[in-house]
Each structure stands twice: as C-alpha cells, then as structure tokens.
Length: 250
Image (cartoon, rainbow, N blue to C red; front, top):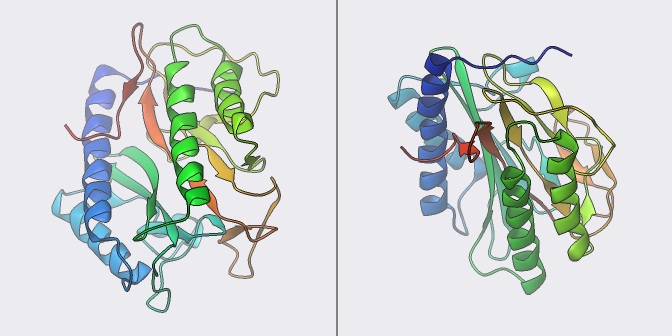
C-alpha cells in the first residue's frame, strides 16, 4: 500500500479546497427545506464551486452525472440529484461534496434535517456526527488506523445503530480515493498514521441493520430494510499535534 504524505504547499491547497466544500455546506444548510428538489441543491453547489475557481470532483467521476451526491432517508450514499426528488417535511438528506482546487481535493459530507424530523432521526444524526468526531480525535501521529475505526464503532454501538460495512473513509489528496481505506469498525488493521497524511473519515450509520445494496442506476446505495441512514465526513490532516480538519471555513 502506497500512502502519499502531503507537502506544506499541498496541505495549503487542500485547505482552500476544503474551504470551498465548507462554503457549499454552509449554503446547503441555508437552503434545504421542504419543497426543494435535490437538483436545485446540485445547481447551487456547482455555482459555488465554479465561483471559487475549483472543479466539482464528483462530476464525471466514473461517469457520475452530478456535482454532489444527495441521498434521502434510506439512501446511504451516492444518490443522484434529480428534479423529481422533492424534499419533504421530516426527511433527512445527506449531501456529499468534493471540490478540486489546483489539483488537490477536499471531500466532506453532512446529513441535514428537512424541517422537523422524528426523535429517532435526530438521534441518528447526532450519533453519526459524534462518531465522526470520535474518529477524528484518534487521528494522531503514530496512532493506529484501527483506533479511528474503533472509535466510530464504539459510538455506533452505544445507540445500537447499524454500521455500513461495504463503504468507508479513504486517503484523499491528488486523487479523491487514495490509500488507506478506513473501515467504520475494527478489523485489526495495524496501519500507522503519520504526520502529513490526509484522510477522509466518514461514518455511515443506519437506524436499522448494517446491510445495503445498490439500485439499478448503478450508483444509489440504500439500506436493505429501508430505514434511514446518516453520513458525516471531514477531510483530516494528521499532524504531530491535534488533527487538523481541512473541510472547514477558513
């Protein structure tokens, strides 16, 4: 496995890319409401990314047809934005955004409530976000990657949430998906984190079971039991000190 540590200049560009991702999420939070289509969200994201002289990382990636992934309720990841997908009161929607700035990628996802949501869904969102930050906290120089995975798993288990097994986090930088792959549960991985690595941590937790499958569009991943799923992701820079979140506003 080849893991590329990033130079100071590369990290600087990834901060810029991450800032653009954060700006998109800031706008998503503002405009997500009942009656809005996921295509409207996609158009808003594309405008922000282009205004900041970046490239939508997802658009055209293995043929993906949109700027963002918008996954509603029981859709886990890779939902394709559509004019016909209209958000309604009580939905949750996961927005995954990638921006490439001068060749470096920022990748971040967040799950948003649409109007008032059920207490169960509130718990799902709060717990998945907490799992993300529990994982990030473990991302220190010389730490084991499995400790990051384990931190996510422990938070999920506290609330007996399903953990998506087939998808996880990943290295990120000049490519959207680099080594290493990051499971959201312990696998006994002895990979050691080092200063200069940049990794996207992304818990995907379900109100029901772990199992998921891909729809006929070859993209949208859904829970087998149809229960809601949440997805939270930050791109993180491993340092000698505290981990640095790169997908945040500068």
